[in-house]
Length: 307
Figure 1 (cartoon, rainbow, N blue to C red):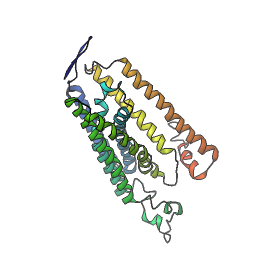
Figure 2: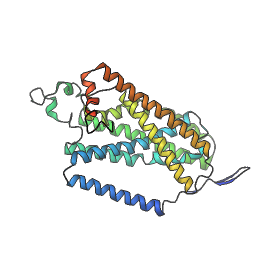
Figure 3: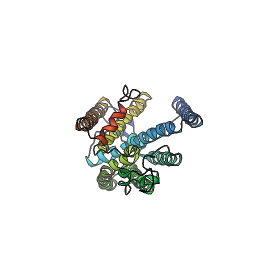
Figure 4: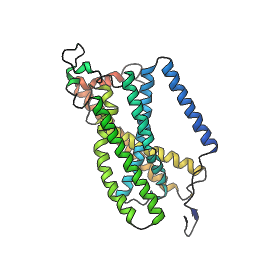
């Protein structure tokens, strides 16, 4: 509906038309991505291809999950500043089911091709009679097993998708019907979602990323991933918002909104950096063999400049 104030007439019912250059570029990018994946598989670089697919799939899913987290956080803190741009994280959150399915497919493909999670997915590692027996991995069998991995993936990402879908629907309903009914439901649901999300995202990152190096373990890794997820999510919101404004949409969003988003991004970038350095410093100077190996590999010549 259109809303009037003393200075401007804004059309709050405007809808973004995904067409023209944006659509063409997106379709070309999809075609190029599929072609590169096919090239990687056909040239025998299967492990490298799946490693990159996992990285991109995890990043895509994290960004969408960050959109859902943004919705829940704004609702619980009763923030008013973000009301004018809330449709962007809602749109990100609504894509979460697609991102989750892609991540599950990539993980399943990694198991099938023995290119991902092979550090613990081989049954011989748990058999004391096998020459491949690994006592450390066998000690983690209750957690590191294929059925448990996929059950947790489905439960975690499935719950995030359900919360995201309901929160977005309640927001649309509140706009259409007014009143406090949808708002009160959203507040209670958001509080529950933040508890579920906060307790499960570290475990989700343990499964999806940390288990790639199953001998290594860090209690800080989950929060490091959460910080990266949150900063990346805010960055994507800012990029989409800037592009929409350049295209003539969301005229009611001004520099104050971008300033608030920028402060959030800056603050949590510092937190992200702090967690990374704290993990690096503590592990390195403690010289714990099973933990220093994580950084030792990254100090090899081919990785060190990027690291």
